[in-house]
Image 1 (cartoon, helix red, strand yellow):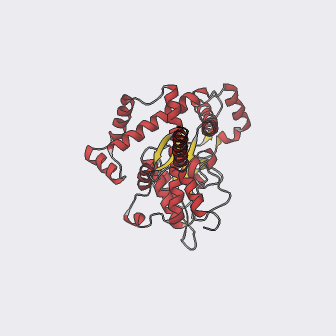
Image 2 (spheres, helix red, strand yellow):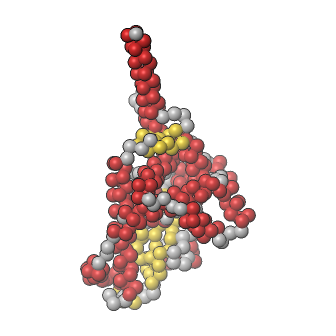
Image 3 (cartoon, helix red, strand yellow):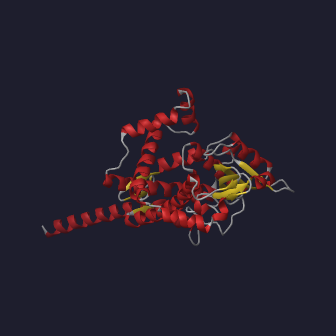
Length: 355
């Protein structure tokens, strides 16, 4: 009897040990868990394929080696963050409904015929089910952030007045001004780059792939400022969503012809195609950018009583505060979640000392 009990205890202990090992190491098809919920390798690969799709030439230069690993790790980190927010949404009762998903899908599809829309899905290598799932996740994340962050931001009239009095010169426009934002990628890694994802291209081929991935995501409806904060390699603007401030018309005339031509064609709220920044002498690519026109202002002094001035200041202060609070909110949620990133552990294991 005692022998049987001992044998049963040993068997139970062995099973618990195996389960613990499996939980710690994950499995071939599970790359991470968030509070026990699995993030599958197949999903990461699907997003990886989507973000690296492009022209035949771009596909022939698909990431390899450490570049490919870095991109997968970045995608996995985003899926982890989304899963954390989805879990929070369940607790708050804020999961996007079928009606909300259908409404947003009809809005996105409206400029296209059914055939054109289906072709876009095929180009991005996703199914309609994938698209609806991503849409539901995106809407849910937006609802959570609106409730937990955006709705709590208050910009007072005194805040606006103080900013105007401290920056009055900004509103004395002696010529037309273009309010621009950009996402910039460099083929030369800069140690001073500190975007939220700590993501830097390592060479020209890597930079071309990265900027194309960002263009793809913009076309899929991702927010310009958020992508700039996460991925832009402009050390001066990535922290504030790529905002370049106002550029005088004369300065725009002196910039490179490609950028100037694109900006002059944009309407407020629109972004342009990928621009290759070239060295004026060697004509070699020294960077890649996507520019967005936020607003255009004619020449003249803008007084505080001008509603446009107050609205511009209020929007700028709100955007800055929102980006800061969102970054802090993500950090707090990450700290409270139980995350196992098996892919990151696998990378360290396979590339550690002596490997």
